[in-house]
Length: 232
Ligand code: BV8
Image (cartoon, rainbow, N blue to C red; front, side, top):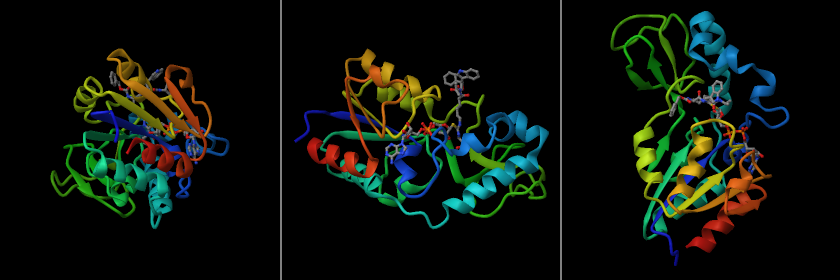
């Protein structure tokens, strides 16, 4: 049985790669085909909303029908069977953690299957394309409907809850993330700061690999289930 009482798991695009979703910074990844400044900032949306909405409409379509994989499922099992607390914080905007059964979950960069009104802040589940003609059900204005995702320069969601969990954890596990986007990339330092054990599970050493006390490299669908088995 695991010696740890409070576990925080941080996940990134590498966790969903074997489900068929593109990562961002790998060769041929999303940011190799699109400039962040053109599609993933509030300024880009103000300048050219059609282009930004089209980028996310395409990604929403490519996420349709995608299934969770053995790594998502192992993390759901960890939450269910670990006798202490487990909080999963994902940078991913896909719904694969929920699909696998994870319940205590924070989507710190938002969710592709929700829309957000830039005028009034109303949020709603949304599986279809977004367009500038769409009218908000709440404030009745058009032109402000955007995906409920956190763009560069915007504050990630539920940071206080994440900080509380990091400030109390005794194990921090980072999975399938390059460790290049802040504040998520700094979580390992917060966990280290309070003496938690820190582990990286990634295909290859990430930017911050040397900050972790332990690192296991390989495919998420292989190393995550094995690591969870060992923990439980
Ligand atoms: C903020 C969501 C203030 C939507 C995303 C300098 C100038 C300007 C800004 C900054 C700056 N320095 C820092 C900043 C802040 C900025 C930032 O970090 N920029 C970086 C580029 C330097 N951050 C922000 O703006 C954030 N907000 O800081 O607010 C604040 C102040 C105080 C306290 C708190 C906040 C907001 C960032 C949100 C950005 N939104 N997207 C969308 O998806 O379109 S970011 C984008 O990158 C992704 O969405 C994802 O969420 C994030 C992280 O990427 P990863 O998941 O790590 O993916 P990546 O491809 O990089 O890596 C995949 C890894 O998996 C690789 O290592 C690979 O080897 C591995 N892998 C691949 N296959 C497998 C695998 N591993 C295992 N198995 C496999 N099969």
